[in-house]
Image: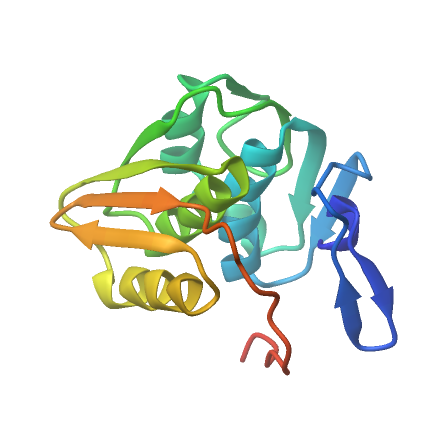
Length: 174
């Protein structure tokens, strides 16, 4: 998935481009719903056109909430399920999303807002798994991002001196 965004892999090291871009027009996920749910809002923040697909049973996972949230912000989707063609770019600095389907979409939107330079994510209650959203905010703060999570509003700014992550990232447990 990351190579589809212009990231180079040298052995086990990932080297991001100066600015992420859609390098490939197709990506297929195996079984990681987390990666899928982060990827959609990140790609929508970068802008472009890509077909996203996955193996079963990931194809059966809902993506309706993120599709509905981004469809009014300059991003078009070919359907509400995988495989889906995503086109366009988030044109607004505020995205509102229901919080009942997955906190991972919210985390993906936080990453996307960092890429865009800043913005707000408004979560319509109920908020699912707020501890994971707080973990994302904390992680990005550790690398120089400015993320403020108050109630159901997350304000995001790209820090001027964001530092790259160096370390190992474990794979999805599944």
